[in-house]
Image 1 (tube, one colour):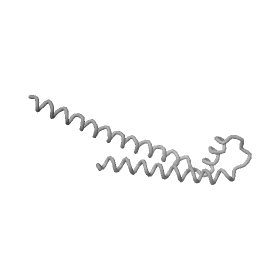
Image 2 (tube, one colour):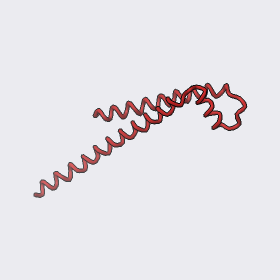
Image 3 (cartoon, one colour):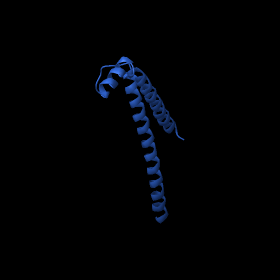
Image 4 (tube, helix red, strand yellow):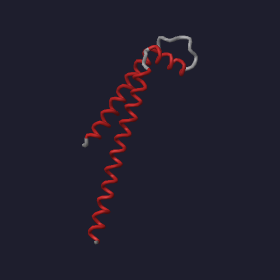
Length: 94
């Protein structure tokens, strides 16, 4: 594996783990809240009570950037393999 694949995998995995931990913290905090009618209000209030906006957004950024790096690297490798075969055929015909 290339270094970019390692970086993309690390970012994606750390984002998933952080996202999961934040959901556990939000679930534990939301059980203590009463009087809120809608789930979305309860979710946002629990997220604010745990001071978890920064880690929550960072986890989404980590997952998105890791996935982008991985997909970009995979598409580059496939493009290189496609072009490699075409160049070989052109050189062989000349």
